[in-house]
Image (tube, rainbow, N blue to C red; front, side, top):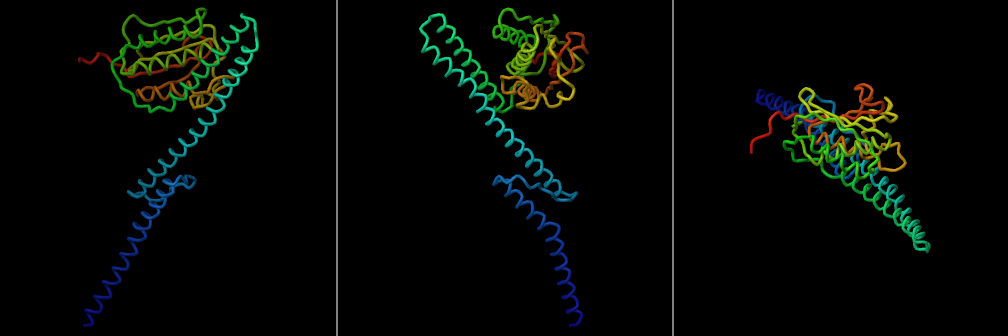
Length: 295
């Protein structure tokens, strides 16, 4: 009986120790993670998810912390976007009201035509702002296919010329051979068009050029403008970063998102490094495709 009693006490003590171990090392950390998930679900994102462990629960906590930071970053971008939308739309709306009222009041035919032209310009500016915000807010998943990048480049040059006027100078230097890449032709055209419009806003002469570079296809837009200071090159692709009086500061952010969606990248450097210009040079890189896939 004494042996049975000692065995029972030993078993009870072992059970208590095992229960304490499980509660301390498994149940309690899981409860902390459950409560952290509940806070994130309710929108309370100020408290970090911390669990100083090297096992599976620690990796799960790290993943939840990355998720919390991602949600927090998206929320911040959404707040900035809403504030920027209100600010950017208010400016052309004010111009519309002013020019429309002046057009109603004037009796001179020429002046009325001029004011209506200004109204049209404000409508076009408003449309560009809305398109930029829509492009930035859309999901970045794209359909990829074999694309000769010379085609979207020429399409972008034509659009930029039509928007800026016939006096614009865009020098296109593309090779005679095809520049086959795995890309989305519409996104590629939009990326080049955004870069062209930025360059034409600061320079009278812009050069578009490109070729194969290693295992990639590189397209570059070079200008003779003031360039981009070194301390601004890292953040120039962030949304709402701009030094222009007009514009939402989304053009380069859209270029970056489009390129990343196509497994490519964008970078900025001094045009003097390539000798094509004296200002800024923006380069986009696409995965090269040696042979078009057979249907």
